[in-house]
Length: 272
Image 1: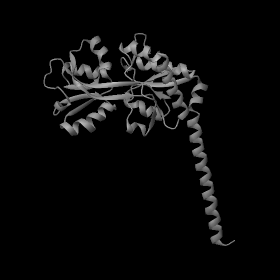
Image 2 (image 1 turned 180 degrees about the horizontal axis):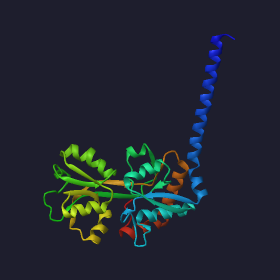
Image 3 (image 1 turned 60 degrees about the horizontal axis):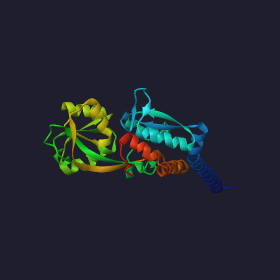
Image 4 (image 1 turned 30 degrees about the vertical axis):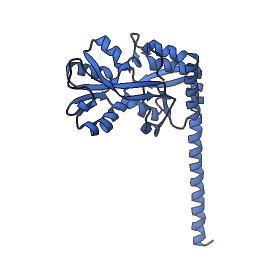
């Protein structure tokens, strides 16, 4: 066999081996994705990531148990999947990374559905619509809308869609202002109440119970600046799990269970 022929044979064999390895990897990835629902059912538990500091959506109650609207939705979805729920709390800024690292099977923590997030995770059909307002101290007459943010100090949740909105949409429109980020809503409201920040943006459902419980002297001003839709987030390429979650949500909405949960926490009919 000539030297040239030997080199050709070796190159052909190498390409064949590489093709087999890549095919095996692709098959394994597809198989792992397809088996996510099966793995959850085999374990008998679905691991749900949430903040645990965002009442009335998700928080720790007096018994130090995870409670709230998100928690009840997650429990009901798990029930319809035939498994139990394991809640794992963490700061919102780390939830998405934790999902990618398989710390959670799903996130049920008011994760806003955005085009950017769709690139790295899949979402269920929306289960709530949130209107976001500007929040200021009750005696503040200088800020009536986002147009008055220039030169001010504005608080927002770290890693949230609201933070991205302030940086990418509001600041280019109205001019520079200082953004203070927070890992929980209560701290931002405390800072607003004592004047450490000039305003914050959040949805009224979320801040209402905190304002009432802590007697904060703050108010929402103007019309909602935007409306967001939240969904249950899972790792990409898990179609069977996504279909099962969507089926559970659809059944909940059809049989009235979702309406009961929504009324329990917000005292109004579902907004979606």
